[in-house]
Image 1 (cartoon, rainbow, N blue to C red):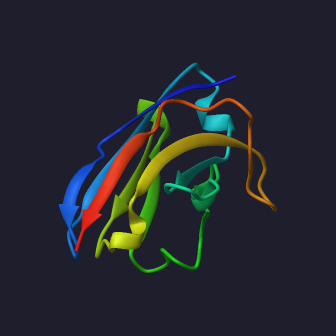
Image 2: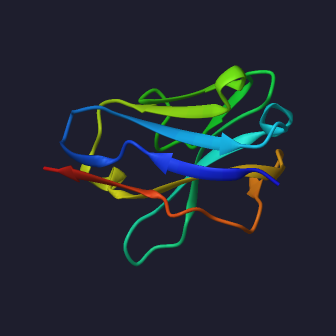
Length: 120
């Protein structure tokens, strides 16, 4: 299975931008569909965005038009460009491989995540 490390989080004002990175180990990264998830305090982890090995993407309605997911298979890295950030985007963001694309089901193992805080 792929080992994953998230980075790029931070504190930003509403309307600002951040770019998250997900570095993967292992030569099978390009075979996996990948996704970004987030968990806000007191809430369950939720799906944010996903990308197939082919580049086909999918987004949660709450981030559509503001976030862009991408991947560089040669660098074993996935990205999440987040623009027009809102306070409700505040959460710990995680990346993970998907075991099922249709329902955006992630594998059970999670990394440490990266904290995104958006101030109003």
